[in-house]
Image 1 (tube, one colour):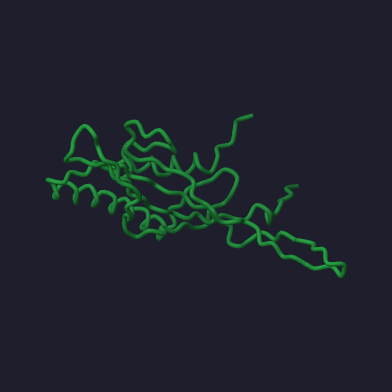
Image 2 (cartoon, rainbow, N blue to C red):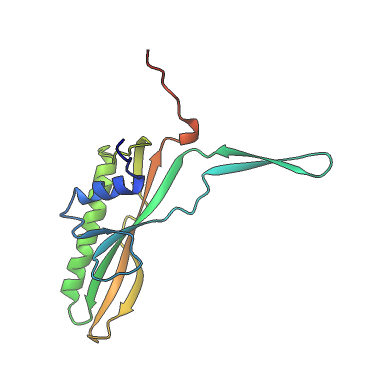
Length: 170
């Protein structure tokens, strides 16, 4: 039996299919090494809504209802070398990130959605319409250079698996 891909693997393939905007795409890495762009999960939301009911004796019963819409977030992180004496090159780098954002927005508006093996993605949205600076690291080898992380947040809406309908085929 073939192993199913995770949602994360499907998103990776979706982004990697556009190599022009996502060159050298890597998956989550705490060790940056020489990676230029990587993606990481970024969902901090609870997928269930807790509804407490108080008993007469003071105890509680909590019912967990699946939240609608069901979604998860990722961060696409671009690692850029920023030079203090080359503003034109720095702006060109940021324009490349903006091109990637524009491509994602265009795909979301034309319903060119990633395909997941377990869930149906019915829409996604880019939460950051402009590149957002996350961190900047000093480069010890070159005082005129710094490494900057720019992030794009993307939210994928999928059918809630708790509400999944089982189809019976005769």
